[in-house]
Length: 247
Image (cartoon, rainbow, N blue to C red; front, side, top):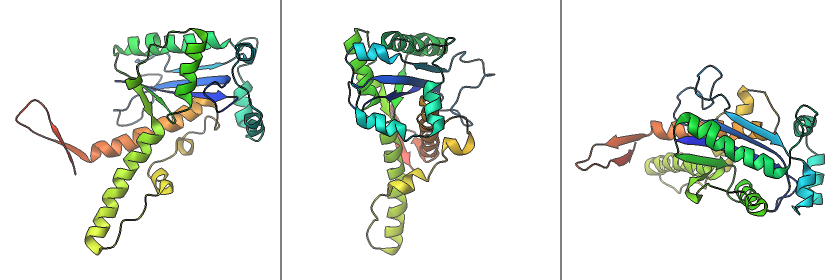
């Protein structure tokens, strides 16, 4: 299993949005100590990918810029703005969008999947209708071979909230069974209190820095995955398949 999370910072919320920067990180769902590849583990030389896009390439190709998103960016922290501008230098110039996305897809295949010797890819994003839709449109618009099946996409937000709902329902059922009454409506605030936020343990970035946003999504999902595994046992069956028992 190869898990990779990617995040785009954009100039619009539309599927045709111009992209300012991209960040991506490979991670380990089954590791008991940390989801992140370490410098000394010898598994991946390049566990992350990041790039800033030359917006002229997006303007000339007709991608979408909108004023409301520009106004939103103007209100963000100085750290977030600095992260957006950090790689715009002579040493690391911004690249045209077709080069950035081609390099990103090559990184997924060559620097991660081939290095790990695994072609079972799960490509994660935060939400179902934003980053993935924009990535698909860029590949379509620029004539870049996409090469990722629809069954390989995963959504951090949906996975996390539905997993948290399982724990909420189990807890609420126990209370109702013991004391009667009705089950309380699911609380999203409660859900996000069930795991630690990456920014609470590692202050190495700012919100809306795409790599930092990837790490936050990864860390929360990895924690809720661990909790699910701790509550699942496999019952032995007569056939080659196994049934899941939730304890």
